[in-house]
Image 1 (cartoon, protein in one colour):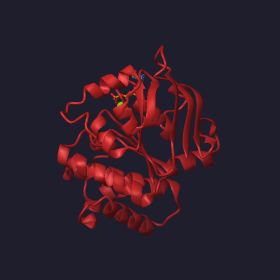
Image 2 (cartoon, rainbow, N blue to C red):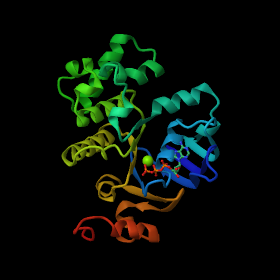
Image 3 (cartoon, rainbow, N blue to C red):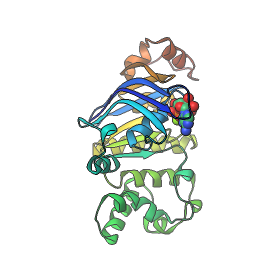
Length: 261
Ligand SMILES: Nc1ncnc2c1ncn2[C@@H]1O[C@H](COP(=O)(O)OP(=O)(O)OP(=O)(O)O)[C@@H](O)[C@H]1O
Ligand SMILES: [Mg+2]
């Protein structure tokens, strides 16, 4: 469904490319992992796919194909609209992704307000449903609350609810659990797995944490300084890493069990 071909991205304010020609494919219904050290270009790649970096800030080359249509050439409103509806994003910091002075409900509904002609009541119903789907309790109550009234884990669930409310086909999850404690992290990962299975929603999962990627993703790509240096089935990459950089990443995993199956 998503295919990135030879993507280059350079900020106008920078003298070098943040992404230096990458190829990446995400198939229907799969969870693809994207790992790599800080500054390697993971977030820039995700923002490009989501259409959040425009030509006023970056110079680009290459193609980002959604079902064969190039999002980078998408001047037509149609494709832009599909990009917004079919591809949604969850970021690391739920608090900064939400508007602190706006109640939760309308924020979950945002995507529906922009991309559909549904009535207010219909939007509310779908928002409540999405909030139940991410295992929030008392959704009618949460709907009326403000972000500061919820815990970090609940806020990340709210962000995921907002991302899936329009039933996107691809979810970009950029370090969605890094800011959460370990127990909540595990719950959010289970949730993403379930959404992938039940809704047949593809996920591009970005993380520093190779252990997490290993549990969640069927395939993984490894980025280093704007390039993809390795890509393959997760087990393959873990057991027989080819690139020296991947070997170093795996050697650095803080666990005694890193070589068992
Ligand atoms: N707004 C910006 N202006 C200029 N350069 C930027 C901007 N945002 C990112 N970059 C540069 O692009 C490169 C890739 O950054 P990016 O945020 O994609 O890395 P990342 O892999 O997501 O890192 P992290 O793991 O820390 O989130 C970096 O060299 C960064 O300095
Ligand atoms: Mg990042």
